[in-house]
Image 1 (cartoon, rainbow, N blue to C red):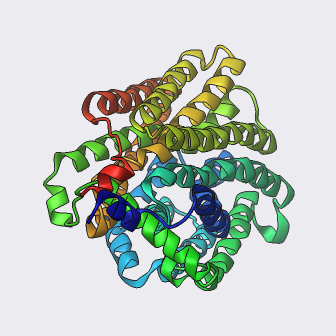
Image 2 (cartoon, rainbow, N blue to C red):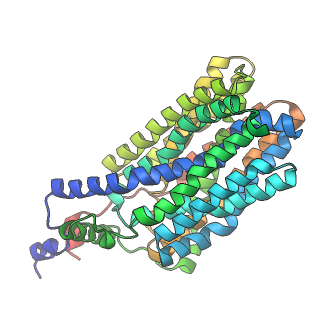
Image 3 (tube, rainbow, N blue to C red):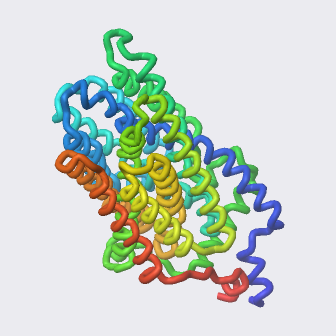
Length: 448
């Protein structure tokens, strides 16, 4: 077979503009709905960061109790994330995501009735159990639809939903807490959990009828469009070279443990900002839940812009190391500024908090380009979940640590110094230990 004939066998039989049109169609079909689900998941996960402003006083709980409850969510993540992702690969995305979404919605609603720390801890753990497979499941799911050179943009759009959830969730929680307090004899924080949990249950049922598991099953694509996507994904797999398909073999690779450590450092900062961002805003003088919500909304809107832009720029330049490492560095330096100026300058704290959110969140979608460089099949399903589950233990430890330090010292600054130091380690590990990657050209692939 000549090289020309070989190239034709692996090239999608289309013009670039036609293939771009197919992927735009896929993006508009999948990404907005997946973003909606992630907004609901994120709101149900982090709304305790807002309701704590009144819940702790009402229930007579300490910051340490809250920090443990906020973080114990990630223990549920740790134990159930890998099994959930392997199940998704076996039974499909729509069944798995339906189960997850309905489960976390019901658990969020049940949390409105907590009276003791033990009940709070159990329901937070259960929320983590249900949500465990969602985030890594969507990462795996998108690899079924997008080649590697289009994935960072898709990841960035999807993951920006967590930032948009902050834009929506803060003002929404503040408005509900203020406007619904006392209705039916319930506190405002109880109404937040109820009204933000119900949409998740409804969305779970919609998921089953809306999502399509694989491109070849998509009746909303034409036969030609399905073939073009199939050929493009085949081309992409060849261009990445040999990748590991065995889960056990991937565990023996030092690369997967390096990525776990890197993502652990990023998540330590991300979870700290998620669960203590509203507290920082309150400490610089904004006591109203509505004001806190709107200030956090602006910060998260900036974070959403950063995530989408960084993902787009990473795809455009086919580079992920510097895009992830420098974003993490921005997050670390900004956290350091927050710690330094806390108690001295409200403006500096708010600017630092916003930049910390932008940097930390912008690192996340680009990070997920790296595992897909060397994992495929079962190894990708289990490996992505393993990275996320172990790294998310930082989401347990960091809020708990901040709560303990705040309880013992009366200040969040010492804890923020620690978190900033941890996040800068992500930058150093990426730039020192992760090799640069250049995809092989289509011609080189064809010559195989």
